Length: 261
Image 1 (spheres, one colour):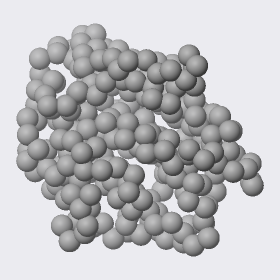
Image 2 (cartoon, one colour; image 1 turned 90 degrees about the vertical axis):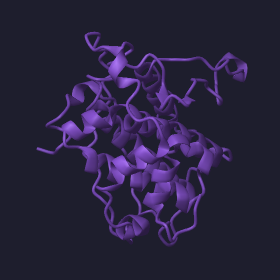
Image 3 (cartoon, rainbow, N blue to C red; image 1 turned 30 degrees about the vertical axis):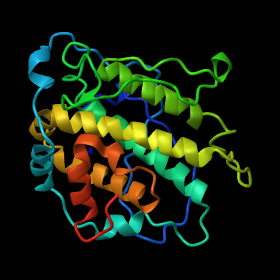
Image 4 (cartoon, rainbow, N blue to C red; image 1 turned 180 degrees about the vertical axis):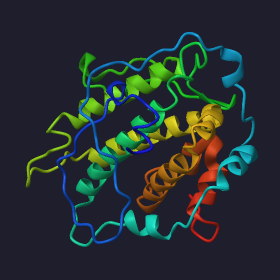
């Protein structure tokens, strides 16, 4: 039994199956076995109290110090994110979006007991950053996106995962047949997806790292985030401002001797 299976109920976490294949010319971490999407919503635990969780880590230095003690060597992950020879870049993006989508779903699933509309009424990362929900690439309402709105953290994560899932299920956006091209705007979509997925990491680090520690999952969370930021750095998908309160930690993960974002 994997560490994830022992700490959460997989029937509540929407993940997807990937039929994509690619050349593995460098060693990679093994992905967790995906579970078919159930369509169930994240459980909202109403018994928790709000006060404790919204104010834990208050500055960037604390976030970096809190997590960096479990960071290991970057060498294998740095090699794993590099585009293999003769591999299509968009296909490489698609494979990793599926992987990160599943990783973040499963990691967030371990702390849903502590992340509810009561404990986390806003999607924030420290008191300095609030992430508002908006569909910037809306395919409904004639392409007119709605105004950004404030949401609870679980509602934001649920909206985000459903939004990403809608693209993953669309063969015109994420083609599954060999030889079918990706849309021209695919790199733009990739950047938007990655920017929003990172916000789930930010919320977990800033407001649920105590619970992650208690569950013994801090090394898994750190490794997942390190993989994520090394991939983003390799392909310039996010900028320093996108990392907000985790900017110092991200720079630590990338490495003091490497080019900063």
